[in-house]
Image (tube, rainbow over all chains, first blue to last red; front, side, top):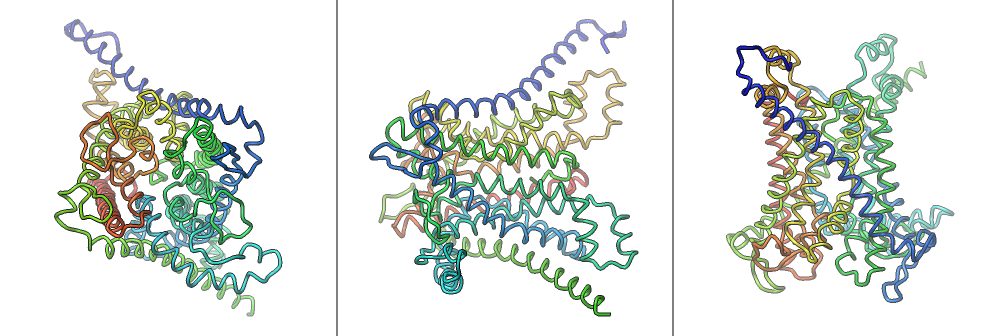
Length: 323
Length: 282
């Protein structure tokens, strides 16, 4: 490559080589910048949260108190809210996403596949603030009037489970936030599931059918086991989104810094606390506590997302370009 | 016989449930769009596009917010797109197969799914505190940080689709890699790269969380990049949660505007891909 033919002007060749170095350097620098960005995020979160962690120590993680007046903060309530809303959201979203993925890969006639697939992808493109405003003005009143009273009446008196459905129907609260989150992560999980289902070789499915299996048996005993890692990866990816989702939750969670056993009561999540309070936070400790919450959120989502990406790494990256 | 019936029934029930799941998903998309249209259209007027955000109780529009959103999205894409494209080029060409590229790819994927509010905190720590005040510039940079991983990903995917034969042919002519990339590979992958950019614009133009404490908001018309600037997502957030009817109406109209813009961008990105006849699967 560096042996220029004698016919070529050497000055021209030198210029070419110089540009090569320049261009290659630029692409490398840009690629390294991606690493620097992640490093910068980690460092800035650590630096910003240091005052809170050094002041409260380990008790920051274990205390429920959140009192700007006495300047005492604990992360327990928002961490609890983040985990619980995401967990319920996944319970709702996983079966529905699974159904959608099956419909799109195994059931839908060809003419229906594309429009339905695009519609589900459009749901993923709707910005989260729209889910928030819709959740607050449409979903919350519907849940308050029709769903929550029924839950209180039927499930409230039950032992154990009943505790989850106590209290007045507020409309906004943990349950509503979970439902909105579930709708939001639906398209992401189903997109990944559909893509991994499509990687199952036709021969495998055909052998199933050849043995006389029904469509469902082929799905459950051939397609699902074959794509298990991808399914779990997709679920984790959805979980990562649910954990970090901010605007949709902020609208409907109620922003109450306490842990209530009831799912109908208002609560808060890490991201909702930051979104609601950060610009109004006065005092270094208050701000630092919110950044510390952010650091915790980053830690949780990093673990989940890294695990998801690790599981999905084996798959054809192109198949997953939608997420 | 009984067992066979059971299997058939299970099959039908399971398949019906999967159809139902799809119906549920589509229902929510429909419900959200319907709410946006029925509430947002009422507020569509000339004033919406010609007046600034009003104080509670008086009429106005969202001109300053539209302007701010356009400006910050532009800053985000102008900074983010070149960096993302170059980094994607490195992953697909120079660094292909190396361990460094694998690490960067993984980190990029993590950034791609990282909560956007964390990006907001990051920019707050490194820009807003240093500058001493909220600014449109900080908002734009926050959006750029979100746009970069999206562009890296799509660029790498699209460059990988260019046939190896074309690259080999160019190399055989004695072209340096940079010449091959800029004169052969980029043009061949153009529609795919454009799609990636459209998707990046769609992604960042609806982002709210990273703007909350970088660009903040501004009730007035401002073109000062070094000061707080109004933007649609944050205006929607504040106005929707306010008790004033006229503010809520503006929030709905703004929400409709943002969503229509983003859906149009996403759909045209898809059309751009399928029109090119190749590229991504969808």
